[in-house]
Structures are given as structure tokens and as C-alpha cells.
Image 1 (cartoon, rainbow over the protein chains, first blue to last red):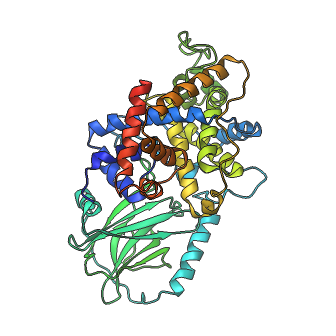
Image 2: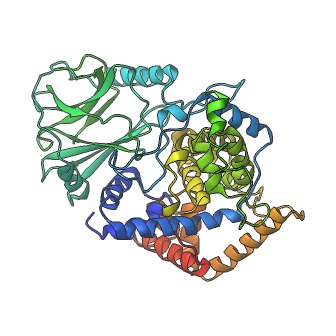
Image 3: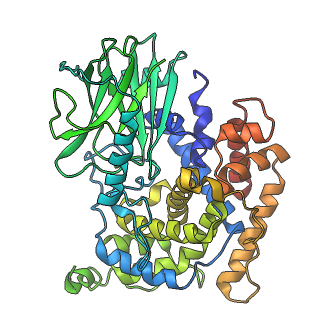
Length: 263
Length: 207
């Protein structure tokens, strides 16, 4: 994991990194002007390749697109200092998914109640087979540190657990026993219902679930959401994600949408 | 959105819908159309769609392959381009590259999602690489572009070209590419980068 991170620029420019590598590289990219320039140039070069596969879309698509844009306004410009600069166009966000008129929902309308219910239903089914989560406990989490998250993603002993959910959402837990920390990298997660957040939990050896922080609000600067889990990930036996009221809960109050068992 | 507000932006004489004086015919200034789109100009976005949709959809089709899913991805891409139009920064690259970056990411996400996994095995036989031989200035320009890119690709080593095509045009990760090309783990990303650098320098593209 400690290979030269600059060497990932090409694979990043053509979307050939997996979620965790992309998260690592984007952390690096934010502070590396050399890589920013290189990625921009390599993206221009890659874009040239599309001249080999020109194909007009069906003519009916034009009308659908022009109808779509009447339903949402363009985002305001990013003003200086308002946010971290982004190399990439902002990632697809939950509000931009579209449906085909006259057809079924496209299946990944991230903010749609339908997809949301699907996710919760699947999670509820999953929890039946796992169990052992009966005792929950409150702990006050320490604030997450960006640099610690980066260290975990780079750690030579880091191991990964991946979960894929209906609708295409994915989450990976990267855990470093030597650092005693774990990071969750999620992509394509539907936005939680209004007034709710994704809360993170670490399962202690006793089986109790301790609050471990929150998923950041729907990412605007990249599709991945990255969060450091507060607590000792070296002794933890698992991790989970639940939906809780804004502000969080002292113990889970809903079925987990994801559960990870550490080996 | 009321039309008065939308069009008042253009009544100052600063931005008439005509193309840039320096642009060849049939090549509207995409960056300018994006800027007008960001101000809510739906007509400008229609022009942008007409100018770029064949490039966007062609790339999406190449990666996603399934026609119905490709249409959905192209539709999502253009809605995203509309939403993000104010975030386009011409100092960081061309408008076309910016739009294709959005399209490519969405296409790759689509093929990597579990639902699409079973659909990509179908061979890529309905080739999209040949632009129809008509004589509009736009089409001729596209054919010249394609020729130029083919020649540039010829300067890459077989491994660089293979790795780049599997990654960019088929949406595989560099780890998958390494396995498919029997490369030592970790070297496909280097081949992809070397190939892109070669392509960039040969084509003389600048960001």
C-alpha cells in the first residue's frame, strides 16, 4: 500500500481505481499541484479517445434531457473559500438521477423513497441472519482526524471488508490493527430521509455497539464518503451503519443498513 | 424560473448566442454554452447537447454497451452537466473533456454495479467507431480527429495501448487490467499512465 501514490494519476484519470484507492488518491490530490496538473492533462488525452466511438443518441433522448433540465436549477458557482477545490466535476449526487418517462424508475434514483425502502428491507433481512447485536452502549466519540484516516488508508496492515447493497451502493471498511483505527469508504449511498443521518458503530468484544461517528453528508466533491470510525478498531469485533435522527443516538434505534464482522 | 430573469443576462450585449468568431463552423464554443447554461439558459443547453451528445453517448455506449442502460446514463450525464455547469473552470481543461469526465465516471459506475455485471459479456460487435460518411463540416472534423487519435495510439506499445483501452474504453480497474494482460500486479497503472502521457504528448493536448 506504500507504493508511490503519484503513480496512480493515470489510473485515476481514467476511473480505473477502486473506491479505496480513489479515496486515497483524492486525499493526496487535494494537496499536490503536480498531480492536479498531470491529471488534468491526462484527462484531456483520455477524452481524445472518445473520438473513436462517436455515436449519436436516439433522437427521443434530446426531448427527455431538455425536459429534465426544467425540473432542477443549476447549482450555484463555488465561491472562493466556500469549499475545498475539486479537480473532478462534482460527483453524481443523489438529486440528479433521472427516470425514463413512461418507464419504471431507473432503479438507482438515490433519493427515492423506493430505493430507500429497498435498502432498509435488505438490511433488515440481513440482520436476521447475524444477531448478537442486542446490547448497545453509549460512548462519547473523539473527533475524527483527517490525517488518521489517511494513515489508515495507507497502512501496510490494512485489511478490507466490502459490502454491496441493492441499488449499487457500496461500502468498504479499511481497518488497520496496528493503528487501532478503521475507516469507512462508501459510494452511491442514497441520501438518508430528511432529518436523519447515517450513524457509525463499532462492536465491542462484549457485543455492545458503541457510537463511532457519522457518515459525512452526501459528498459534493467526490462520490465517495470517507469517515474515520471513532473507537478502538483493533479490539472491535465488527462495525455497523444505522439510520438515526440528526444528532445521533446513544444506541442504535433502527435495523442496521450494513453490518461488518471483523475476523 | 421566469423567462425575464433568464434572458436578461443576454440583453446586455455581452453574450449573444452566436458562436465565437475564432471557431470553425460547426464547432460551437462549448465553454461558452456551459456558462450560459449555468445562468439558466435552456436554449444554450440545447445547443450544447446538439454539439456534444454524439461524443458523450458514443463513449457511454462503448463502456456500458447495453443500449437501454447507455441511454439512461447519457440522460443522467446531461442532467448532471446542467446541474454542475457553474462549476466548469476553463483554466482546468476543456469543456468537452470536463463533460466526458462526468460521462465516463457515470458509465464506469454503471458497469461496475452488480445489476449490470451480467450484461457486459456480450461482445462489442456493433461498432461505433466509424462515423457515417456524410460531408458536413462537423463530421469531417470528427473523422480527422479519429484519424489523428488512431495515429497517436499507434505510437504506444501494445501493452500501453491494451491497458489504456481496457481501462478507459471498457471500464476495468487497473488491477483487473493487470490480470487480463498477465502483467505483474501493480504495473498496469504504470502502463496506463505511460500510455496517457504518450498520447497527451503526441496529440499536443494541454489542460
